[in-house]
Image (cartoon, one colour):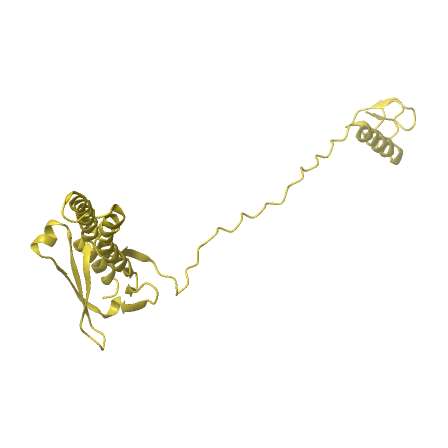
Length: 222
């Protein structure tokens, strides 16, 4: 509340003259007293505390995802197949049966005595025939990729023939009645390259399924 600068009487805020002494209320001393009182009020009022911002940790960028970059030289392998192993298994069974019969015949015949050291090696020699066929079978490998078909032959020195899929014109499955019963056959591939001719994958198991896989890859090139 303001006070009169002359007599010190209390003045209302809207009073223009002091009611006690009649002095004008609007004077420099009165304004100074009012300003000083308002300044003391501002000083006495508690100041709000400044809120310090929480430290913000820098965001770490996620590690880049690992991507497999395929080069032009890398190819996707569709299948690898060798000629059927059915004949090799039959050969081993017949050779083992023949070896047992040979040892029994040489040991039971009375006219020429044969030592077991002779009959057993002779019987085991029969197993060399299917073993040789088995070795020859393992030297042949047919591989289909997403761009070509490979035919590898050989054990020590190998020969590889490649036929690009874009040069293949036709695929034919050839099976006889015994082959159809035993689920193997030949896959004939017509080549449209300069050499021309046909390539045969002999005696592969389930030839129709392999032909379907080959035809599926051919649709991407034609």
